[in-house]
Image (cartoon, rainbow, N blue to C red; front, side):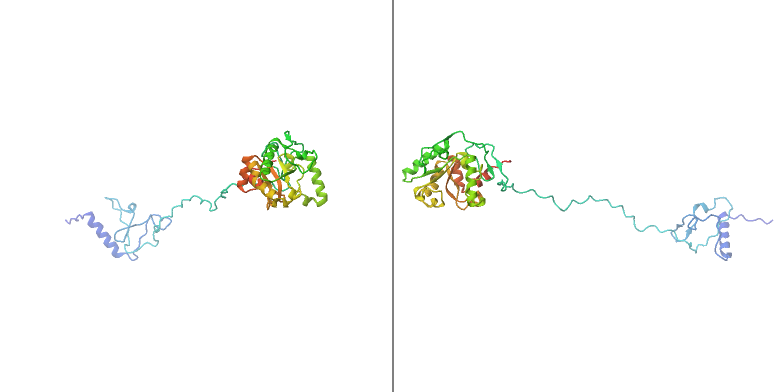
Length: 322
């Protein structure tokens, strides 16, 4: 009795593979699996030897007789797997804070501007005209109805004999003038008072007459418009001498009396209000005869500063608003 030998399953499978490989003419097989969009049934997995290994779903189950599909181990798939990206995606750039503007804000001024006199034509009416240190000029005028309440006639020499208002000064200024004249007398210097207080109306008449005679522009160099004259304060006096023929003239400044007055006036509270070479500052020509009472302390300070009264007040106090 011929007995068929029982071969192990592994031997039989090996024989089938060898036989199939030897008799196949095309080296290809038809797979029953549906291809995916790339033409393959799933992405192939590369083996260490470089051959293709079917996905696990195509491998036969142990204990079955289902023949294995024929695989051409030497062939490569017609479609290569999609290569993995060689570079990592660029991470989204983190937005940086907007740069600060390169232009810096305008710097603050390093110094505060000094107060300055108002432009010509802009006139301020003085609120406190009775103050001894009242500041009067072309842009700072006295009220039209202002009349000092303490006007007196000082006991000094006058260049005229009439009993007129221009003899008068305010009491404090009149007392100081008496002392000034007395000191001059002691040194052999004879001074004469020419013109003191003038009312608003008197100044108005004078300026009008000078304007008709010399023209308004010329008159404004030596005469004040009404309300802007220091004579209305009762704190100013025009002084002359016999050597100057009792006239109010620049020549008085060159006389012995004029020189003595300029030197000693501050000792008694007076200053030469309109010094030589300051017309562009004060608005008036040189008047060596016009003295203004400020009191000893202020007169000494202004004289020491070397400034005109306008410059002194501009630096010392702000200009008052109209």
